[in-house]
Structures are given as structure tokens and as C-alpha cells.
Amino acid sequence: VWNVVENWAVPVGTPHAYDPRGTTRTCSAQGFFFQLAFCIPFYYVFLSTYSFVAIRNRFDPKKYMWVEPYIHILVHVFPVGSAIYLLTLEAYNYNGYASCNLASIPFGCGDDSPDGIPCERGPQNMEQLAWYFNALPGFFVLTFPTLSMALLYGYVRRNQKAQSEPQQGLSSTVVVLQQQQQQQQQLPEIPIDATVFAKQAVVYLLVLYWSYIFGMVNKGIAYIGDTLIFELVLVGEVNFSLQGLWLLLVYLYFSVDPTNSNDGTRCCCHCCPGMCSNCCRNRIRNQRKHVISGANNNSQLDASVNRRSENASSTNPNDNNNNDNDNNSMGLGKP
Image (cartoon, rainbow, N blue to C red; front, side, top):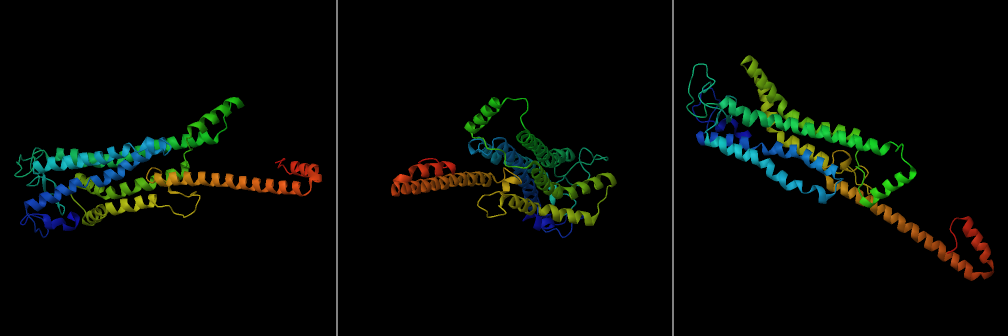
């Protein structure tokens, strides 16, 4: 809503503002909700943490669901706290672009002013606060999931390599004991290919960099040349306003099973686990059902063969030896 309002929230009579129609209160409200909007990328960022914990615990809900309540709390701590704190400092003012955000008025005032101009509204150290409450959170949004995905890729690759390589230097008895211990622990293998995971991690991270790249370029141009390119600012504002849409599309891309197959071999957990761990659990559950149903079918087949053998024996008792020989030659054995 505040992205649509944009310059209409700027107080009437503000110099160099296009079509301002708001008041000081609407300007403060717009800046408050802009700061509160950090919750959106924070939720997306902490999906990497949820994914990391889920994979390390082999998608066992008892071992990774504990992290979800903490994520819901953490993603709100900084946005809510910083938004309220900056509101008490009257730090939301017209920023010279097209909306109200972190700024003090008049422009160029405060501690960093070369002429020593005091700020009429807003903190005197606005540039310092902008780094703490705007630049650093943006840096965190980009670096934290990047490091998480890099560590997770390394873990998946090591796990895949350990599963594919033969265990050399170990006796057959030790290998059998290790396999029995793994079966008793019931730890399923990580159902992820490292190469596929790397590609999907790039997709997951790309949307974050896409959301912030134009803003970073504009900030760099303004810092170096003390000027702005209107077309680039326009693209950056529109693109960042659609950040929620980009994040939603990627989340849906990872959360929807692309097939309706019963075995779930193309389940979404092959591309980016943790975001759709229920899908992964369903895939494993379906595989177990197929194993059980296959065993039942084999049991029914054996029972049918045994019944036929019994009927044949009762029909012709004199041919028991021949039936036994035929059954043994077929690998069925005597019922």
C-alpha cells in the first residue's frame, strides 16, 4: 500500500517533491511500514536456516521442528524494534527519492554537514543510523543465506560422496555391522543430489540479489558522483516494490510437487529441501508403502503357490515325490 502511495504521503509543500499530498503523520507512517517490511526478506532468509536444520536431521520432525517457533520470533525482533525506535527519533522524512524513509530535514543537515547546519526534524547522526538500520540489514539479507547455502551444499556433497564411494580398508564384518547400526537408527539417506541442490540454491539466492541490485547501484552512483539516473531509479523502485511477488513465486516453485506420481521420485525435496519437508516425508512414506505392498504381494504369491501344491498333493498322493522335486527345482520348496 505504501509503495503505491509513494509521494502522496510526503507532506504538502515539501521542496523538490513531486505532487506531495500528505502530512507529517502520513510521512512517518510510510517510513514506519517501510522499516517494518524487513520482515518479508527476513522470513525468506531464515528459510535457509530451516532447510539447514532439516537436512542435518534427515527430515525427522522431532529433531528440526523446534527451530520454527524461534524463526517466527526472530524475524520480527529487529523490524519491529527498529521501526519503533526510529519513529521516536522522528527519523522518517522525505528522502529525496519519491517517498518517506530514513532522512533528516533539511537535506545535508546534521553531524556530517560541512556547514554545520542543524536538523530541524530527525536525528543529527542520520547517516550513521542509516548504516545501522538500513545498510547492515540489507547486507545480512544477502550474506547470511549465501553462507548457509554454501555450507549446506558442502554437507550434501560430502554425504553423497561418502554414500557413493566404497568403504576401503574395512573388513566385511565391520561393514555389515555399520549397515545394521544404520538400519536400527532408521536414518534415511539425504534424498538430494548435490548438483541439483546447487542449481536450486542459485535460484533461491538469485531472487534476493535481483531485489537489491538496482538499489545498491543507485546508492553507489549517488555516493560517487552525487547524482542519480532517473531511469535506473525508476526500475529499482518498481523492482523492489515487487520483492514480495518475486519471493512468493520462488517459494511456490520450491513448495509444489511438479508431478503426481505415486513414488514421488521427482518430489520437491530433490531441489531445495527444508522448504517442503512434508513433501520429502511423503516421498519416503510412499517408498515404504511400495516396499510393504511388494512384500505383501510376494507373500500372497507364495501362499497361492503353496495352496496349489497342497491341492496337487491331495489330488494325487502317489506323485508327492515328483511334486517335491518339481518344487525344489523351481526354488519354491516343500510347503
